[in-house]
Image (cartoon, rainbow, N blue to C red; front, side, top):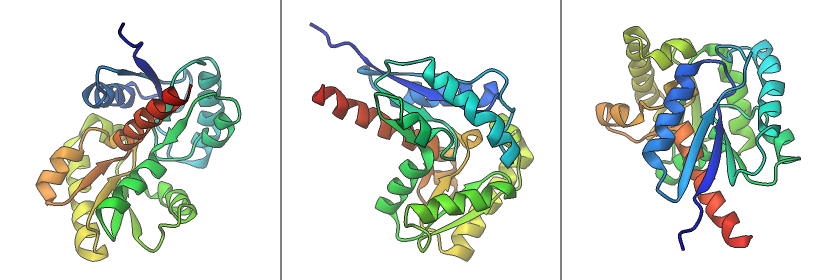
Length: 223
């Protein structure tokens, strides 16, 4: 008898369908036949989460969406933040993973020093606070490429040029031996950038999905 495939719910908390589509494509590419991922987004959320006001609007919508979808084997918040993580753990009966913790763990296994490259400068202080909470501040720099989430998700040429230039600065000025892509809008670019720049590039959303799949497998064995 074939085991029932495990199911992951992957929540993009912003309202940009391009980011959700990139997230779904990532899940389809990396998850095996024993696990299915379903990328969703809340109605009415900001097109990009780039300010505290955006976050304040997006988080309750993401929490409501999670509450409407019980019964999954694990959950992923597909953004480079801890949006909804702590409150969702109070009511979900399955693991919920975020991209920051998952990608920092991956980077630490690959390099002594690494850099997170995100989109807009307004995201940097929050990411630095999350990195410090994980005890990785001495190993990690955070840089903004100066591009919007929507431009990153659309793969606009100027956005990609700025992304390349920021990775070069992180490598040459910060001594980064690995790069984390710190935005859902950057999902799907890691393989190309790793080959182009000659160092490991970690897709934060991919890292979270992989970690959620592993957590769901462990939880299933314990059930």
